[in-house]
Every structure is written in structure tokens, then in C-alpha cells.
Image (cartoon, rainbow, N blue to C red; front, side, top):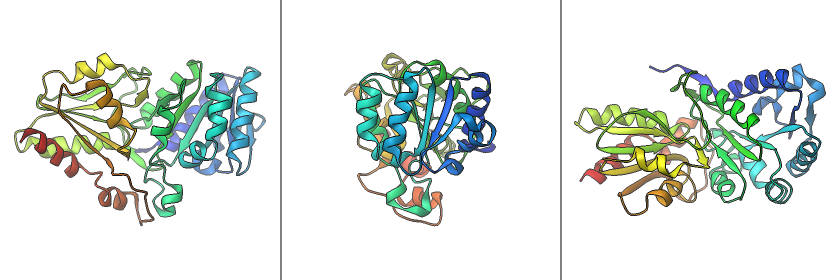
Length: 309
């Protein structure tokens, strides 16, 4: 069984390690450094940390200004707030001029289970995918978080990095190559290709075990880079299968499922697992919400069987 690791901690430590080597890196936060883990910068490099208070719009504007001085600003908040509250500043001040600002949205999807719909970002990927010049990354595990931090520091331009609040299984290796835009094959299979990201990759692997007992073989693909997304690589990974299933902790509108559908078109039948145009709600745990909204291995199995029938 894969070990569990907290993506937020992995992110905070990776950013601190990078900042110690690169004096251009600075961190900004909207009064949530204890949750986003920008506190690692705050506690160890306080002269490179800017507490902006509960004011995401101002934080993003300041990050834009810092980038114009040659800094590499990482601006942090919950996903729902950094995307929703600061959209105008992201669009006008960062994306239009293509500034080198990294936006880090923490606690996406249902991972902030207790705080309900107001704190659960289920439409953030759709919004950020639609913004020209924006790169969108959803790491699958703590290893990929560390790799993504290195990659986006080297990348010149705006990036939205989506980090879960929950511990997640480690599915990749440190030596695996992370390339912005490239999907990764996690497990081979011949009948159905399952494109997933974030926590739903581990759900797809559980579905694979369940389906193997029924003599069905699925290919599991991690799509952590939603934009850009290498269309030819997506097509190549779908070759030879009878259908495709997409799985994401996000609305079915505008996210991973739509990205794959745009590439594949009508050439292969597609079914989607995601949030069906609904807001979240409060619950005792992340797992309770995943079950309630149908983000489970069983839901993936059902879609696979639907395609094969």
C-alpha cells in the first residue's frame, strides 16, 4: 500500500528549499500561512515573506509589482479565494502582461470538508484554464509537488498551482521526470484509458484492482498539467482502447474531462467522473464528501462497465 504524505507540507518545504538557493523567490499570503504552509518561508526567511491580510486582490497586485522588480513571487490563499476574490487582478495585472507570478491555491475541492461550500473550490480549474497565458498544474502527490515547484520556478510566466489539504498516496518516484504539459502513464492496461489527476488518480488505481477481478484492464494516466496539455501525448496514450474515462475532484464543467474531450473529440467514446454542477457542503471528513458526490473507485468502475457494455 502506498504511503500517505501531506501535499501542503511537501509544498512548503520545497518552496523553502528553493528560496534558500534562489534569492529572487518571495512569498505572500492572505492570513493563511499556517494552512498554505508559506509559514516555512515566514519562519525561516522572514525578510522574504509578506503578510497581506485577508486581501487577496491587494496581494495579487503586490505580487505583480514584485515580479516587475525581478522577484519570483509566490502568492498564497485557499483556491476558492485566490481565484475567486482576485480574478480581476489575476487577469489584468498578471495574465495580460504575462508576468512571472506563481499563484498557489490550497485546500481545493472538498479537502476543506468542515467549512462547506464557501471554502470548497470546485470551479477554479475551469476559470484558470480559460485565462490566456495561464499555466495550470494539479500535482498527484507530494513527490510531484516538489517536482512542480522546481519546474514552475524555471518557467517564465504566470502559473496556478492547485494543492490539496488532505494527505494523499505517493504514486510517483523522485526520479520520474515532471514536464509541464506532459501526461504521465501510471499503470498499463488495454481496455479503457482513465485520465485522472489529484486524488482521483489513486481512486483510478483502486478501480483498476476491482476491475481486474472481472477480467477488465484499465490504463491509468495522470494529467497533472492541465494547461498546457500535450494533445499528441494524450492521443498516443489512448491508442488501442475501447473508451476513455476522466476523473477529477472538480466540476464536470471546464476541467479535466473537458480538456480531454476537446483533444479526443468523437473518435473514442468518453465518460466523466466529477462534480455534477453542484456546490459542496460541510461534512465530518473529506472522504464523506467524496462518497456523497460520487468521486469514488466504484464510480469509475461503473463508467468503465458502461463503456464496455
